[in-house]
Image (cartoon, rainbow, N blue to C red; front, side, top):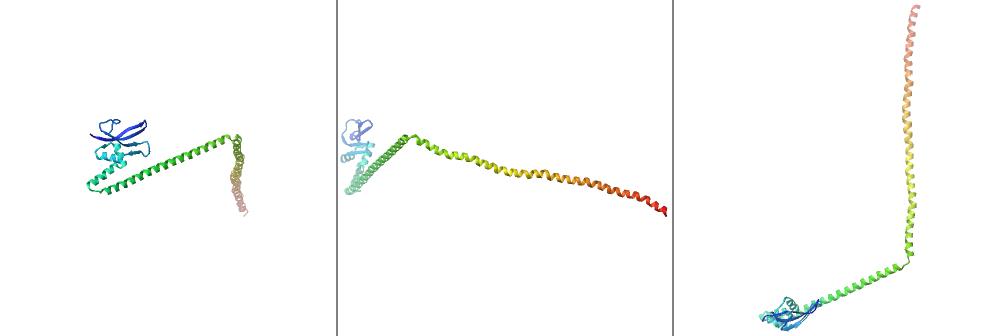
Length: 248
């Protein structure tokens, strides 16, 4: 008869609880079984495993085949490692004392890992609780501050904007003064620049144009008079010569 080491389900919906049993391979999951070896509770962290080590080792040595989940459980509890060491003793590779020492060392290491995991879980739980308490305290403070702000009189809220508006009024009154000063500074140079421009446009060209014209008109008749005077002199001198000859 082929026997198997497997789990038999118990517990309510969403909270399963298993028995570790030895049963016929042809029997249904929740049917008849040969022997109960222990229990397995996956609802805790780490999982709670309670098993009869010696009986389970005997069934494994006699050829009972564990299922995948039961194989992981037996490896976790050291049943399969103990079987491996006994095989080494039968082959002469190890003595019984060496096998027991190695198995005890493995158990100590395993127990240390389990204890460390439990400690880490407890510390993480404590930190989560402290963080939750701090968040709750902060929330209470914010709620209290909101209540205080709600119960304060509205007069204080009105006075604050009045104080802030005063600097705005000062800025508005000072702005036109700056604009007027800017206008005065820009107009003064423009007036000074226009006066010399008008003087140069009117006086300089007119004075230069009139003086040459007057000089030309006055000099032309003088030249004509100078030309005419020698002609008169020649006319008078010509008849004078015959007179002188007749006298001779």
